Image (cartoon, rainbow, N blue to C red; front, side):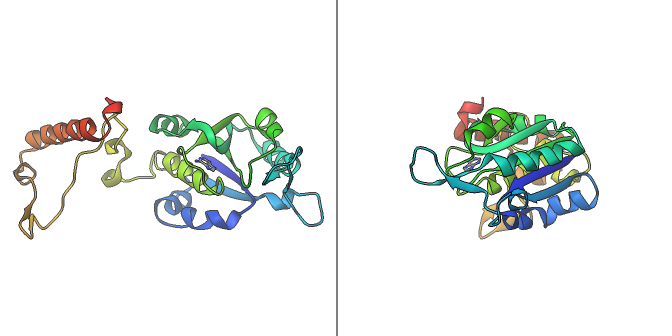
Length: 223
Ligand code: ADE
């Protein structure tokens, strides 16, 4: 898989992809993540990528031209399955969207800033808009990192057995059961007896029950 991220603040994306699982996934060539600085596609001498809104109003608007030039340059190299604009008024990110996107070959994630992008970008250049939640961030970069992380960890070979995505919360529509590690007793707080019993069938049954109970308590809307 290849993910191209278009942003006017490329440094914001250095650390999420430069560490841990996302870093290793790239080292193992399971994914290529390229961050593109929108300023490099600006045609004016100050390399600006935003301008005042027609009709007035507070806040700058990201111009269509640098975005179009960047997307066109990428599209000249390969076909993209989706060109996604990260936006608080997009479709809400879910495990099922992450699963769906993890089957694609090439994705572009466009990060907005200020008051957003010129509406014509949304009308003519992007294929989909995704939000990571009903709150407004200062830019789409952190949202793009969240989306990319949720997708990349599902690619075959990225996670080992220990961290397998199949046992995640939401993957089967339920919240994951609680987990414990040593010591079995700490300050009088004990690990549930069944987990120490060595009886695998009983342990699985307990985990399933706990998943269901947690989902009922915390996210009844998932049931
Ligand atoms: N950009 C600003 N806020 C956002 C959000 N909640 N989701 C995606 N992109 C955003």
